[in-house]
Length: 356
Image (tube, rainbow, N blue to C red):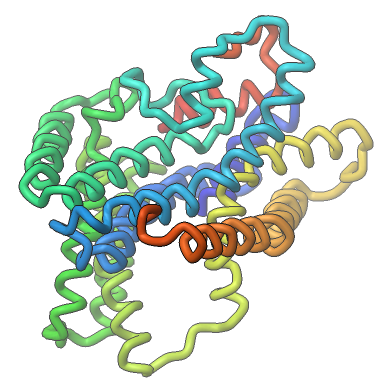
C-alpha cells in the first residue's frame, strides 16, 4: 500500500510527470502505516507477553528488537546518506547521528528524514522501549504507556496533522488496538463468523479511505483510529482463519509479507531512481502513464524482495549465529542535511510530508 502511495507522490512531482494517472485514489494508501502499527502491536505482544515483568529477559528482548530493526536500516541509511554527502554541501552531524540510531526527535512528524519512511520506525522504537520498560518492571511499563496514550487522546483535538509529534499524535492508540486484538484472539473465545468480520473491517477501513480521498468531514485523528478499527477486524479475521485452517494464503503473498521490511525501507529510494532513469532515458516515451505507474510499482516490489533475499536474510542469519556462538562461549553473563536547491526526490519528500 505504501509503495503505491509513494508512487503516486513521485508522479505528482513537477520535475517528473506532474500527473495523477489514477486520480487521487492512491492517496489513502498511506494508511498502510496505520495498518502496520496495529499489526506491530499484535506481533510484539504475542512474541513478548511472557517476558513482561521478567527483568532477566530484558537484555534478550533488546537484542531481538535491535536485530530486527537496525542492521538492515543501517545498510539502507548509509546507501542513501553517502550519495547525499557527496552532493550536498551543508550537513548537520547531530541530525545524522540521531537518525542513524532512530532516536525520536520531539519535532514534528512530517520533518524530512534521510530515509523518508524512518519517521514510522521512530514510533516503533518508542513502542519497543515501552514494552521493554514493562519487561523490566510491569508497573513502570503500564504507567509510561498510559501517559503516551493520554497524550494521544489529547492530540485528537489537533486538527492540523502537520502539528503531530512523536509524543502527541493519534498513532500510539494503534499499537494498543493491535495488543487488544492479540488478547481477543489468544483467548480462544472469538466465535464471530470470519467473512462478515473481515468485510466489516474492510468497510470501516473504507470509510477512512473515502474521507482521505474526498473529505466527508472526519478530522485527521479520528480517521487514523477508523483505520485502526478496520485493521483490527481484518487482522483478527485473518489470523483466526489461519488458526482454523479454513483457508490457505497463497505462497507468493506470504513471501511478499516476509520481505515487507526490506521493501518498506528501500521503496522510496528505488522509486526515485526509477523516475530519474525513465526521465533521463525517455524509456517510457509514448507509454500510458497508468502502465508506467504499475510497472514502477512492480519493479520496486521485485527490488524489495531481492534485498530481503540477498541482504536481509543473510545479515540476520549471520548476526544470530554470531550471538549464539558468543553466548555458548561466554556463558550466562551475556544474557540535518539542508538542501538549497530541492531535487525531485526532495520535492517528493515534501509532498509526502504535506499529505500526512
